[in-house]
Image (cartoon, rainbow, N blue to C red; front, top):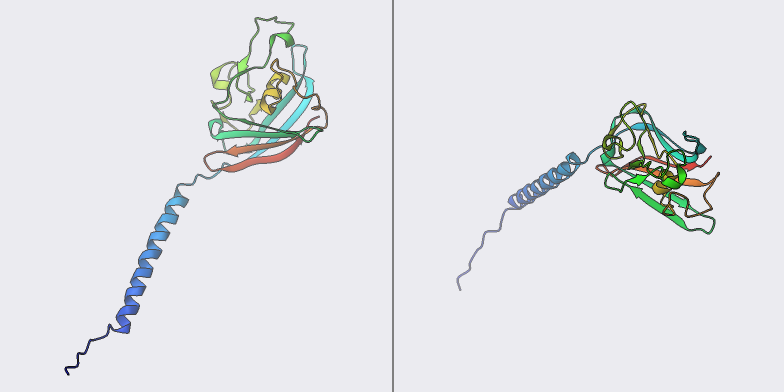
Length: 209
């Protein structure tokens, strides 16, 4: 009987092969993870103050106005933002409204609220608009939310009750509140999302005054 001998693979060679495979896999995973990290945009940093107040909005009209003041920090492209508001009424029902650069324009001075100017006075804008007359009227495209860069010192505003109810998602169709529960003391959870980075640059509860 002829005995055949088969040479075994050296244990050292086996270990080296395993090491090479491990290094290759680690390099692939590292490169993939690095690519993901490199493609993630960082959220801008800014100090922001949000208010919801009832008072004289000008032209002899008392209005609920929601304002967003940029107190300092990075300039922010409003086309990159989504404003998300939550408000819960006395029955426990929660309204949620999200505002983007693609949201519809609204008339912040509907005819029934503007006896001074009559039914021909229309102020179509996307709220909150840039509240700076030195740069234009609220009805001009460059002032619409989504069309401007929000800079330190700038204030965005809903302008009137009609603009506020539109931003909160409680519009009765004529510029008034569809829910009579809203008023002084109401708490709105306001979130400002930076869409490219999926990070919130503002997330606080705001009490209506």
